[in-house]
Length: 156
Image (cartoon, rainbow, N blue to C red; front, side, top):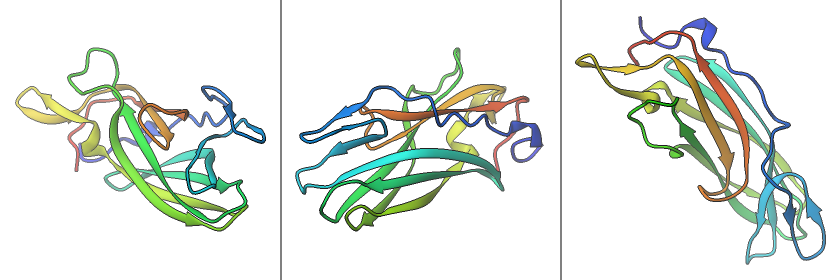
């Protein structure tokens, strides 16, 4: 079977966050960091949809600061327990530039090959629940969603 099965659609978890961000002048519930350039870019929500050869990951990003700035939104993937894949591995990213107090929606592609591992003499995406953390660094705060893969398949 090529590509993820239709039932591999995600569960949207935009309300599940790690911690609030405290900045010099306010507290943010969104995911983000204050940068030396004086802007505060944060991911407000994420959505994942099935696409040919993988998933499209959309992230709404807001610069809540008073200056324009650049940010890179990154997607880190963790495979189900018992997998041979690394935990929290960079799987997708997208840079953006935002004016002060502006928002945009970025779409990043998460190829199903980023979930593949060697299994039974071939590359396979194993069935299970994969976790996708979307934020600005591997050790930062994230918005978290899960990808439920119901059956093992060969990536495109």
